[in-house]
Length: 89
Image 1 (tube, one colour):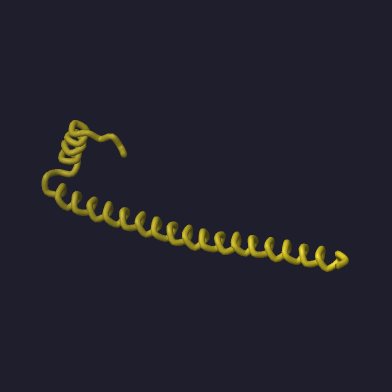
Image 2 (cartoon, helix red, strand yellow):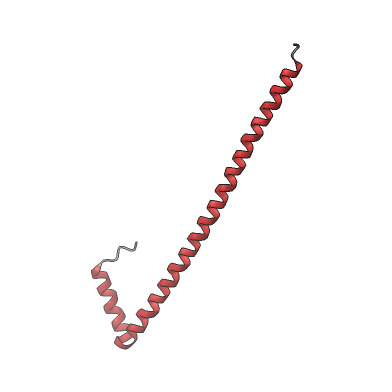
C-alpha cells in the first residue's frame, strides 16, 4: 500500500524513539494501534453499507427490468389480439 520496507520502518522507529523517548513510545504505539483498528473497522462498516445498498439497488433494477419485459409481452399480446379481432373469419 505505502511500499514501506524494513529500512524505512527502522528509520521511522529510530526517529520516533528520539522524538518521544523510550518511556512514551509504548503508549504511543498502543494509541496508534487502537487508532488503526478503529479506522479499519470504520472502513469495514462503510464497505458493508455500500455492499448492502448495491445489492438492494441491483434487486430493484432486476425487478424493474422484469416488469418492463412483462409490460412488453402484455403490449404485444394486446396488439395481436386487436389484429386478430379485425380479421374476417
